[in-house]
Image (cartoon, rainbow, N blue to C red; front, side, top):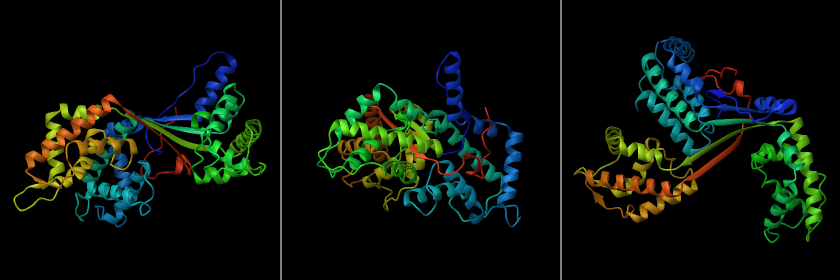
Length: 384
């Protein structure tokens, strides 16, 4: 995700060398916290001028309104800013693209006026800014400096021994190269290593470093592993110096606070439940099937500070446990008020579980394009 406000994150230090390290850290880390978006939308004159320019750019036939086709580039840029894969590559992402488009068109195929475009864009941008303020995205430039610091530190050997002990030789690990490949996969951004699960990182950073690795078969001694592992990581450092990798790092803790805020605001709660139930199918007497409780929870998830079902494994387990506890999957037909009561019971139970056992989710994704050219819809963050 490349859009949003930018601040700087630095390490504490003093003295000449530490000051130099601090400056280097400033160059290697940027924190996108939504402040630039808030500043843009908050300045009516600047935002109106910005909308005028973007509307004119999108309005290809110059009829003063945007068709669904003309809105597509704006929706694509919003998706990129939200960190979604390109349209057409993921059914889940495509659903979100459709939802964003519906925000502009109100679910119709009619054209959108400049006023409507401005209102919806403002709402979406403010929502993104609030999300970035709550969960800032740190953009890391990984050039081998931190990884070199790790392999020259006293903890390198200790951590390497631990990694070696955890590798199961029965699990298809037969050669020294296999051991080292699995060991590299255990290194994280905290060590200064970009995600090796990324195909570009594997092809351009990891595999070239592994080429000189001997093909010794089992059994592999700890001493041999430590010696070769350090050599390979040193080569990874060299490749990162030649080809630095940009990584977007984010963290979020699901602790039930979002649900608590929603439940404590009666007006917002009723508004959310009414909007959710309005989209659900009913039988002839207006009753709802409990099988739609999962759909209802997913629809209200953004208001409750929850991820979509299927996005976070640990959260899915919590939801499944709660649904089992309240017999939410028995498929019975219930009145609207009973359906609402079940929704409140589900939200309350999820909140209590998360308050007792918060779930921390962190993600690291490689940014494969220059930040300055990643989006045509959003202004680039100002330099700090």
